[in-house]
Image (cartoon, rainbow, N blue to C red; front, side, top):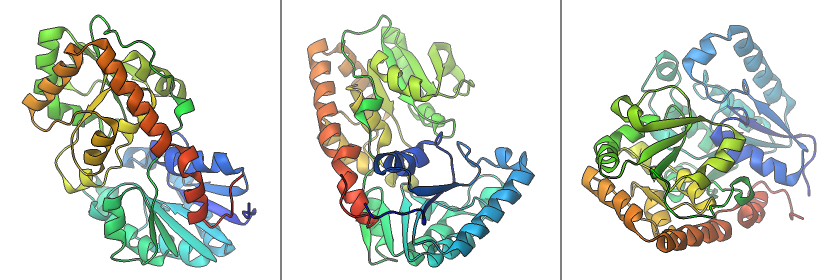
Length: 353
């Protein structure tokens, strides 16, 4: 495969961050280690509070970006953004410095105008995403919604979904309900408030069935009244691998917003990889994914309560049918094995072994 030591992947986070792990590290693991990786601070996120505690590390990270831009690599893959402090200058310099430059994004960064803390307002993601899309030789978008926007600024855009490695998830073997039933969710502290969008439905299901929530992510309580029936598991590769098989139903609620339309449906694919029946908000990519996976969507509190109760009250054989069929779809259409040739072609790496 034609990828030498002068190929570099630049990502804002370390392997512990879902976006960088899924969109960069997992691919590089499959093609060997000839890509150098420039991971800003190698942190799981770029929360302003984390950055503020590391002024010297920030300075060193900015100097490393300058060195990368001067190196003029043969091939550069930039994921999301080069620096949380940049307003587009690093993205432009890095992509312009390469013989062949690819920009990859998997969220609606073009609609992120900097809501939140001071760092977000000073360096919003929308402007730098547009700079990167225009400067790159090719753009890889995580879904058709993102690709449609990128195509307004770049002629060469390809869609490659956020993929799952089925071997990273223990497949569910028993579909008999736990006592009490287990409703599950996987994600970061940043996205956890999405569960509050369906709080009334969850409380109703808990009242009627005793169902509890299992959250794989942060161990810090943040869900108010829902905490009384919530069990938390700290995220790790092992907990992500094992926990879904111990759930009865996966959950993926989303707010009705432009940003949600750009989501890549990754939680649904994680549940599917474990063979876990799930319910999601039918927004953006989720609309098609729910149909492909044979899973229900829900918008209102009543619809969420009805969908959860419907799956809980279904025979175990029906939940098993849904779960196993979804796992098969994930393997055939959303796995790294299925998309590796397309990803290698997008990076112009030559044939994969």
